[in-house]
Image (cartoon, rainbow over all chains, first blue to last red):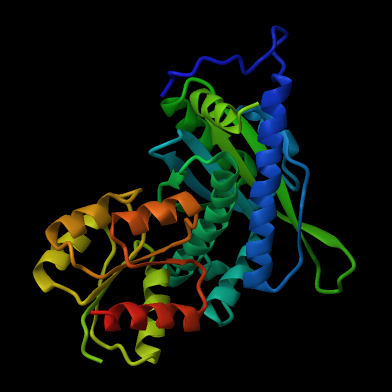
Length: 216
Length: 122
């Protein structure tokens, strides 16, 4: 990669408007497709938040709801055609619900990330969720988008983001971040609860490739 | 049914779901692999009647394994089973020689119909 030269930032360091627009739209269609998939699997109505496009750095934390709590982090990288990472942050209660739907039985919270079947169910769920996002993105851009297998960890939001950024910095010089929240209606149908975020972080060369593919 | 089916998926949960779905439909001669290296070895050694192949594995993230299997046995019956349901990738897989592409999460009925169709189509 790196054959495509493109300015992602303005002179003042802000994100170039076309780049932001495209990534914003990809966040929208990506999580839109995820919400459809989640709705089918979990039989719930999933709402999507407004994508936040930033540099992939510590500022991500400011845009995570309930960022002082433990979450399940699902890590994976782009493979083959694009470079960068993806982090899916999910609330523990939501993950418990998901695992119970997938496994068809009650699961105690302390076994969520210790039981092999449960971890595997979370991984499979994460893969389906991320693939939905990538399928929408692939369809929109015409780029064939492959990803690596997922890695699942529990931790505080800050730790999970820090670990992702460290990994990203080892592999990319610069990356952008498209962070989109997901919300579901609670059991009373009265309130929307934040259940997680999908944080896509393509490196600069991949962003250039995406922008070029969108042909604007 | 005695046809040997090879399930290739890195996720234990996914393998369990696929195995259960196949067993419910009467397919009980099933072997599994959880990475590309094991899968290729099992494919060469056991000569399965059908291989159900995930794309994303720890040592394979594209259609390389599919192509390697088809180099070994061009007539092999291989169904791709992946959450990566991008139209271009589905077209690539079918062009490379996969007989079907089932996108995860799948409906049991659709999964079995495609498996039966591919196995019966000699």
